[in-house]
Image 1 (cartoon, rainbow, N blue to C red):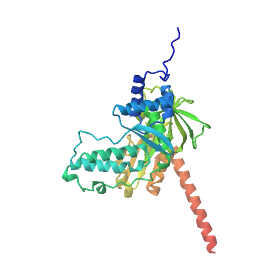
Image 2: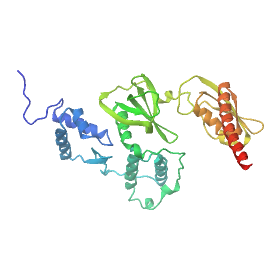
Image 3: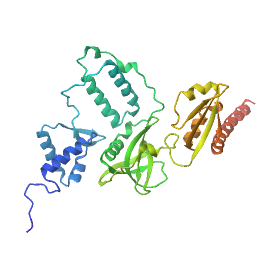
Image 4: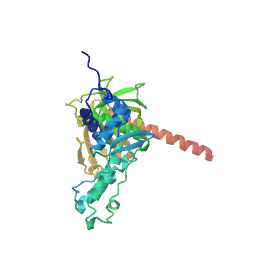
Length: 346
């Protein structure tokens, strides 16, 4: 005997009680908010049923709010709730918090920055009753000067989708500006990487079945696909992905790299860790020699070039050749300018 659906009750794969739990869990894990149409598709009900369920959550004293993201309406858990147990911090802790807050200014325009701003504001409210916390101006006592940060303000939509994919293990669909693969690509996103004040997404390319790194600002038409969840590889270790890289770009055979530096830049070389495998040796003339085992890359070449004539590559031969070619190209360009200026003067 075929069972008929009850009139007025939305058909779907969940009862309302289970659906409410699923809905709350979805909202709890989506601080950027969710489109109602996406919720309806995931729960296999109509948008009208989703709105009815949202009202049921509000009836259970769960605060919700609607947000307009570039003309697109989303719903999320309200972020205005007050903690009944305010966190008290010492002045040193408040200063440390202000310092961390400034360091994340490079991510302005991203959900990271929005959520951290709200979090820091709540922590500050928890100390409002402390007379020593008033008018300290601690944020003005720590200055962070970023090195050419990227502007993410116009990429907020795609960042929300990337967040959704990373946090919920959903495959992403996108176009990549500058990539060698044409057309739409699919990626199983594993983690975001902050490198030189820029965000990069690491994930497994579905077609190539290999891990790749993508600059977030070059990803276009990004969509997290609720119908395409994936299971994360429990053996994945992001630190190993960059093992042997001098910076972000990994892959390739490792080489023993040896570079000599003049005495005038020796202190700058010694005081930083350029790579975990580095070994720095002070020379009799005051200069230093640095050694490490890394793959040859454009990042490594650029690092040597930044020191100009104060650096000299000893090995490997491949790196010597690449640095030499760059210097010759630069000299030729300046030679042409000098020749042109001389001709004009005559």
